[in-house]
Length: 196
Image (cartoon, rainbow, N blue to C red; front, top):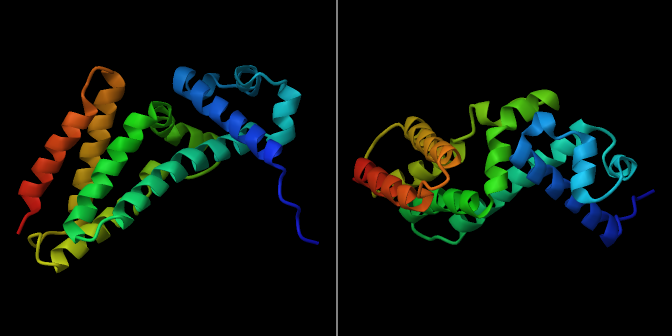
């Protein structure tokens, strides 16, 4: 028998609980984001929270899915809106920074992703060897178009990804750090380093 879709109010409540968990993790870290505290942040009882998420691991799965899914969707949308292969590479970079600056709480969740993943019994998404594969593929397409010089796309994708991680880490440590301006500098640097 097919499952009935969740009523809109149930979906909205689940979303509210995930949002509250994201906010609390961003403010206090995942270790201090107990189910009781998340429920209090959301303005519901712990029993109500447990109605939607049977365990903290279930809730953390939903948190990671929301944060990483949102980032992936924004990147894919930005890349799809380009025609030129080189523009796609830089749309990828810009969309990451745009997402991070628009969602600072998500950045803190991503920074805590290794510990969250371990707690929820998953592999650390940041340690995934294929993490930068989509960027490497974009670089390869731009090379094929003749716009970028010959280089190992996987290595360069990892270098660019490390630079993005470094900029975001600095922004987290120093809230006054201009992440958008730094991203422009990174784009200029990468263009000069990779152009044919």
